[in-house]
Length: 254
Image (cartoon, rainbow, N blue to C red):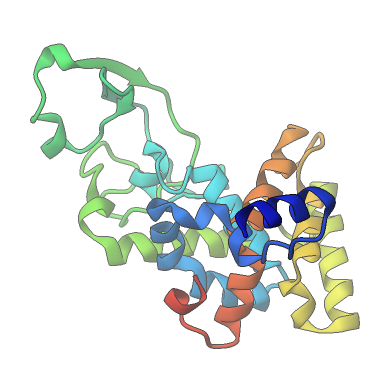
């Protein structure tokens, strides 16, 4: 039977692989853990503001490395949003790098577990990124691991970061033409087809290509949209956000 199937596959007669089987990123626990905490509320925030939620979730995954970057872990700024007037910035820091895996450490309780010979201390420049920690510690060098020990506050900070993206950063009146064009295109689609159009995979792909991959955009690199689209497809984010919007539980959808 196996030989027959292989033969049929070679000439194109085997049944196609289902979409669910193509969601290759779902096998990684860190991807699931990252999206589980923010996907439902992020989806509704996006729909309220005419942003395709699958594109937003894919961008957060790429920009934060699914919350592996030290700046995002400290600040909750998983979209790498730059400073705007009045924002509090994460300052320059002196942090150690763990030599065995090149990872930057910022939790003092973790740092003390290692010998001096295992660490290389480095000066980290100002991040130029908004710090979403509580106002009492935001912009300071203290309690850098605050969100590590306060998961609810961390999720709230990440959602605040997402809200800034969908309401302010990618604004309808932005000085960046790419953002204005993207918002107009999404608004026009919603006016014509309703909010459901924002849940379609192609709409998410179109939005990503509007805001990135060109000069004066979210990310000018030509490869950036391709990376985001890969995540949209391989994490099944259009299906996930559609399910969540329709009331299906994250675990059941994933």
